[in-house]
Length: 259
Image (cartoon, rainbow, N blue to C red):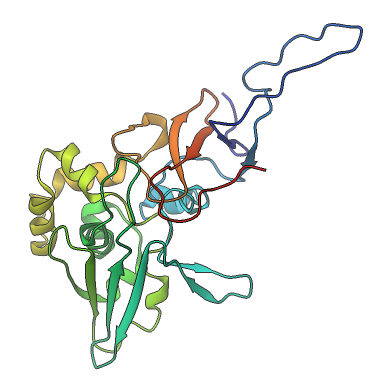
């Protein structure tokens, strides 16, 4: 059994360094020994869903940040920096704080489908219904509702009275998953998923919730679900648990560069 606790997320497009020798012929390295451009993590790569219980337990956000970026990212001094490649925000004060998320019109998944408010609704409701989704998103307990017309590029989060001061930490890395892909896998339309989420229909959400929780696990890699809104997309999982990433050509921000 190979220990996955220090595995490499290697770029699929990276060249494998060939073994060379001077005067003697060295045996070629095995697949596990080959060198890739990548980065090592101190936890197993189990899922790209950072809001699931498994994702929290395995620090899925370390990988998921490159695939499902957050609305705000933490800067070097701890300040929260808006990720305008994904969305902009407007705060409406009041007894019930409201935050309007306007999704970047160019924000697109790696399958060519747009990022829409249903993705925000799904992320919020998954956190608000932990017993249904097996989720752990504590800030979601502060949400009263999410206004989202299915397919729209705008979502409004309304917080419970007296809550919402930490709204910048909502929709963190690895929590905004592709609602349309989950709906397709569940055999329903995006509009039907939206309605079930708004109604908190536990029966209708049984299959979407199962897919949300299990479908992003890397040991059973599903390319129809593992589509990306970030600078990289997952293209496969190797024999030793390494996750192959390649640039997402649909990413609305600057394309990643490999040193």
